[in-house]
Image 1 (cartoon, rainbow, N blue to C red):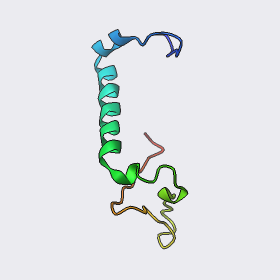
Image 2 (cartoon, rainbow, N blue to C red; image 1 turned 90 degrees about the horizontal axis):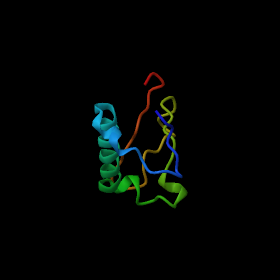
Image 3 (tube, one colour; image 1 turned 60 degrees about the vertical axis):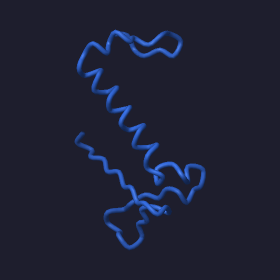
Length: 78
């Protein structure tokens, strides 16, 4: 398969395959979550809108400056 190239049209026929459909659904769902959760976008251009969470220093970790708190976790094993 070709690598993605911003100079060419997308390979829409790849959506015939379940793995490509899954990625399309994932991106759609993440975009919807971003739009629906103010904590993810309200303070986009304010440095106070984001802080790292240190699992080893709970007293100094701030999750959000908004009324709603959203935390995302990632695993190095994914």
